[in-house]
Image (cartoon, rainbow, N blue to C red; front, side, top):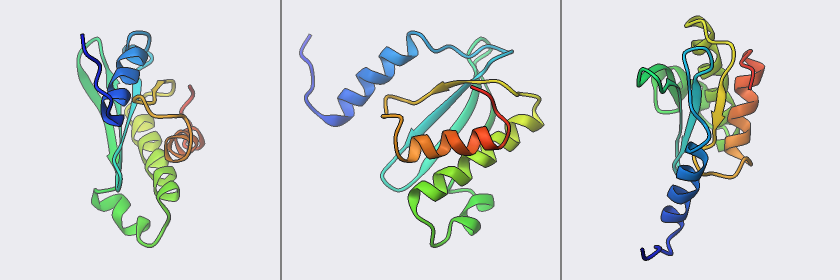
Length: 122
């Protein structure tokens, strides 16, 4: 099997490696992060049922107004707080964190911090 040498292919390989071990259940769903160059998205997923419990991103109206003029890491923290609040409303207090093949640094870390401040444990 020939390996691709692009950064995207490397991230996908890392994500698959992480997903071998990280699995969301009904009691402890998976908090999944996707980060593009301009936006950040988060979902709380029950992998047993294949069901998304809660989702948040910076492109939706709730976050877009508050995110105006802020740095990307501040917006990521805001999205983390939003996903934490929505997960708590659905009765989720503990999650496993799926960093999506990204380094736990910068915007991914800011999102995790925001979710922790909103009351999620991981």
